[in-house]
Length: 126
Image (tube, rainbow, N blue to C red; front, side, top):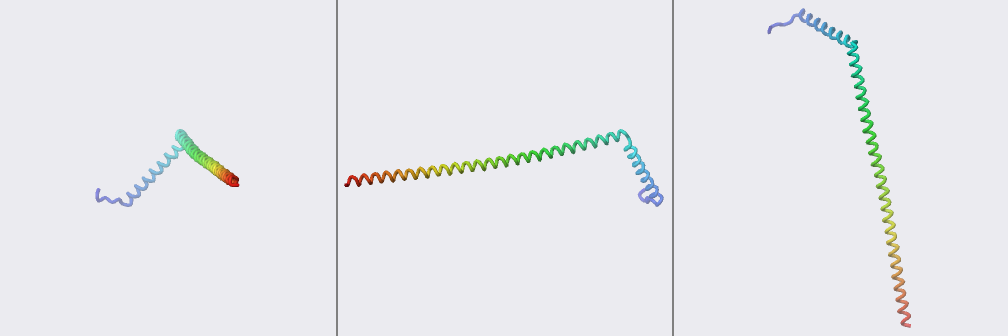
């Protein structure tokens, strides 16, 4: 069989057999497509695929909602932090103003005490 080379008639016969096999296969598929059990299986597969796609879409929507909520919470936290920093800055400014006011009052009291001593010293000299 090593030296066997198919002639034209053999190739024709093989081609015809291949066509017949493809035709038979197509006919079986067509017959199976009209089979009620096959139709039911196909409908079930389609329903399962639609349900799977719906679940995937729901998960994606849930993830998007979670991300949006996280972003909203982060924005609210950032806003609250900014307000807190503003309050702290206002408190520091208020404390600094009070310290300056107390320093001014101490200086006034010290000046008044110096003036009183000076006046007392002048009064003793007279």
